Length: 249
Image 1 (tube, rainbow, N blue to C red):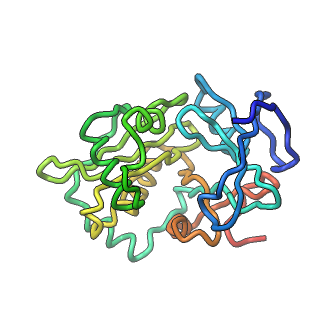
Image 2 (image 1 turned 180 degrees about the horizontal axis):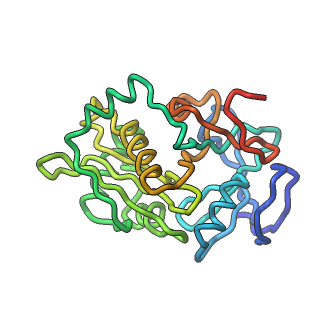
């Protein structure tokens, strides 16, 4: 990590409160081949739901306690995407996915790492993301998903026999429910658990009376992120810091 504390002209929106931002080292872009990515970030011991929501509206996301914002040179591809839940209309295929998974039992609780979840996460990383070693050790798994500076909730999806099929972690604020990560059993790929998880979280957002469901970054041209655009209507955070209906100039 570069210990320089710097400001950057991009993006146009600035942090909602004054924090020292560290510019992280360049690395290969995870979303677009051949691109170099850079972020600026800070380490958070704790953030109120309201403040973290404001950070998301300034183009920040979090990984564990690291709250970061892309500042890639000459690139504006990483855009926050959200769904206004009162206007969300599932597509025909999404409705089929919802019906296909009505046998699942979903529970919501405080996030808590367990051996069962770590085993599921490793199998997901190996089979879904083709990481031969499972991606991370137990300590990294917990730091990434279960060491949170904000109020978070964990959804666990089980079949009728009680087998854990999927886990979704979200951050909760009065104005937003924000997806942090979703991992699932690759053996159950026919269920479309990733789509169902997002549908359930959108529904939960509405049941809680929260206006927006945040899906993280959306990057045009990144095949792995195309599914996010399928939850319509949706809005993206423009480089100028304004929420706009996706597809409108």
